[in-house]
Image 1 (cartoon, rainbow, N blue to C red):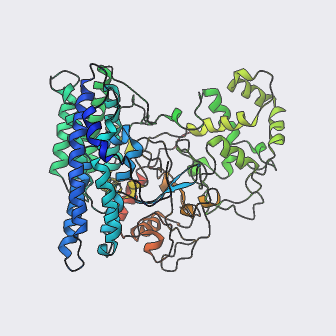
Image 2 (image 1 turned 120 degrees about the vertical axis):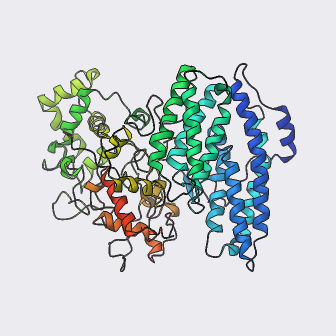
Image 3 (image 1 turned 180 degrees about the vertical axis):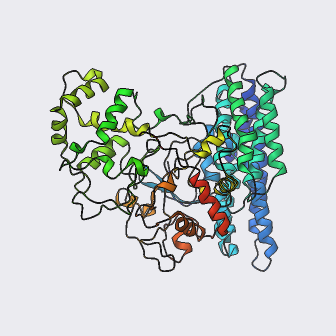
Amino acid sequence: MYRNKTRWIIWPLFALAAVFSAWGFKQSAGDNGAINTINLFREGAAGFAAASLEMEQALYALDAGNPATVDHAKTSLRKCRLQYKRIEFFLDYFFFSSSQAYNRPAKTEIDEPYMEYQAPAGLQQIAVLLFDQDPVSHKKALMEEAAVISSSATDLPSLLYRFSTSDKAIMESLRIELVRLYANGITGYDAPELKSGIAETAQSMQTIRAVLQPWLRTPSPENIPVQKYLTQSIQYLQQHPGFDDFNRLEFLTEYALPLQEQLSNMIHTLQLDLHTRSALNYNAKNLFSKDALNLAAFPDSMNATPALKTLGRQLFFEKALSGNNQRSCATCHRPEKYFSDGLRTSLAIDEKNHVRRNAPGLYYTAFQYAQFWDGRASNLSKQIADVISNPQEMNGVHAVVLSRLQDSARYRQAFNEAFPAMGDSAITMHQLSSAIAAYLGALAPMNSAMDDYFAGNKQAMTAAQIHGFNLFMGKAQCATCHFAPLFNGLTPPFYRFTEFENLGVPANDDLEHLQADNDAGRFDFFPIDFYKRAFKTPTVRNTAMTAPYMHNGAFASLEKVMEFYNAGGGNGLGLKDAYQTLSPAKLGLTTTEIQDIIAFMQALTDRPNSY
């Protein structure tokens, strides 16, 4: 649970640490891989504790009159992060709350529904302060952060007191770690200032190899490919250490994703499958497969039979759901416009006024834990029911809408086919909204040019699109908010949360004469200051087809969107928003690089379908 304080000290058991370490942990007989992993964690924890102490001393030595002390502090931070990567997979899987003291995002995070917040802290916060224009002015805060990390790192062995695990759990932790590296590590998600993501990924890969040694020592048909791709992945990372020019597409397609596939095959062959922690589909080939995420893990999960989806499609286009019998869901979410409407904000039901926000496309919308721009609906069914009754949108009275459907022999039959257990019962709003939700859940074709490329067609993307992918996933930092593989705010590696961000979006797209936007965003639903002007991060799949952009439709083109991001968002352009979560630092992208990123986003356009 997040707490309202500026730092978070965990496991303050200094006097007992040595005793707990000596006592060790409980372990089932035969789980040799788990025993090896525990020993590696002990070694890694010791290395991290030593590195954190060195970092603390370097920060203590910061001197405004000696710029070399700042460089030394940055170097010590890099070393400390590399040591942390030796134990991150273990901490994040087995002791997630404890891991957050060391490497959580450098922004205030909200614990819902308790409406408490956790202030920025840890290695990422140290990086933000250390890369400020005047880092020495933050020396006191830096020292406080370093002291917390150093003291708690010394105490890490105490986590093993009465701890037990299994080889199956170890294997699942490695599966999740690979996803973390592909979606976060190589993108620089938690070290954007340091640009150390490639070196850190290499360190994590070496840890994975050490963890797997009990299974890799004796060559076998199932482990030889794992050894091969693991070695090649590490070599590629080590031979190409540059962050901005790292070829992520080549790394993923040639080495990393085959490694993920082969590790899964080995786990299955050894009968060490375990699925407890995430929305990942372990039966999928890799992270970029069409079935990489399990739709059943998300709200509104159901057995979406063909009859249910067919009914949902009929209802999506049904004007009887509106108060005036003139509107359907498709009025503002038009299939030919990739389920958007091309307007800044949609027309209200009176055809004169406009609703408050832009109508986003609906592809992949089921893969979220919150709906609407402000996330006020916890699932699609609730969103659908809300839209139907909203006075500005469809203005339908639920009882009247249901009565109309009940009076239709065609709909009575369709509902009976979709819900066989209903018998002669009356149609309900839950059935209606569930059917439309099932239809929307099917809007996930993943048949874009990029998907074809990952499926093996190396001609599917142009040179500009390939370069754009590498920029999107690296230098441009797009993938640190639009996470692979859906490129929305669904946060890896567990894919259990939906992010909300404040980008400082203005009310207009004249970046030289910005006007502040007065939409409070999620704050209206969760009245915590840190949610002011925060909105859900949408997918950029099909974004080339769904202009205009942002919650208010302020940006008419992707060029304007990229110009805005390149300048550091609203604050980078001169707006003063105390709650902007996007870094105000300029990205330094050239005109050609921006065009290549846009070309890649065009490669995320799904082929037209009969939806």
